[in-house]
Image (cartoon, rainbow, N blue to C red; front, side):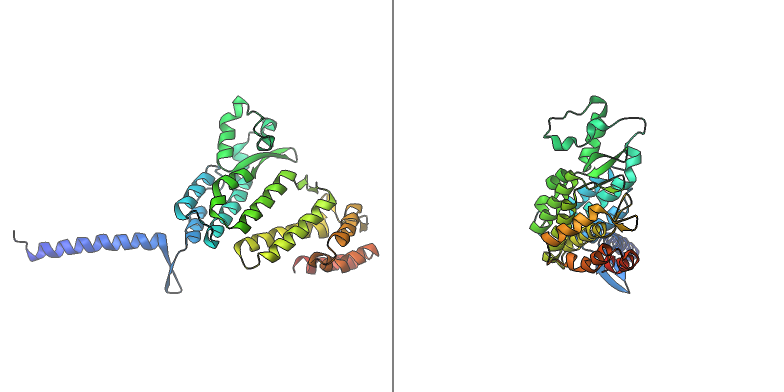
Length: 297
């Protein structure tokens, strides 16, 4: 069979178009151009791009993000996997913030679902909430009641089931500590709700862990937690301020005394010592002047 020159040219042209389209699609999903140079996206970057396109007000988007993670990452201990799980953890917090109003009806009482995961499976889910709870649970959340409202909170058991096989030992320790603190609670109605000993212990635990994991993904996350608790230990919260009636509040006087006994050589105590001294001397304005420097270190 003979083919005309025009027909052969047409075949090559169509093949070229198809290959070009394949390359275009590949570049769209796997590479980007930065400063005129092609950059091959890492799996973490691909996951981040995917998550950015999701609707954070939709609770079901967490399942989609989890499925995408498992599509991209292998079950092995690696820093790349830690980066991916860190993105999921952050996304859970974001969805908890934006999806709550879409999940709960202000006219209904969801108290029967609060802390249900922490009762060893002995607490039954009411029939009327069975479908809702399944959606909440399968997307990595639990129900929490705070300030008279029902909210979503990350479920540590979901993280354990879905992601522990993928992460480093240090990231597993990080998630376990978050889970314990999640179960113990932290604040209610913009007030610190844990004993001063627990607050101090959390500050020191996160200081030590952040130092031990420095320059890693988990180390960066640990430092964020440390700064959160150190800030609370320094100035308190809206309804648990460190300074009341122009003097140090009793909760914080006890906390600082305990910090001195519990971890006198810690960086946290060394940073706070001049501030504590001024508070105890009732030099309140001078103490307040130190706060921006303390919190920005």
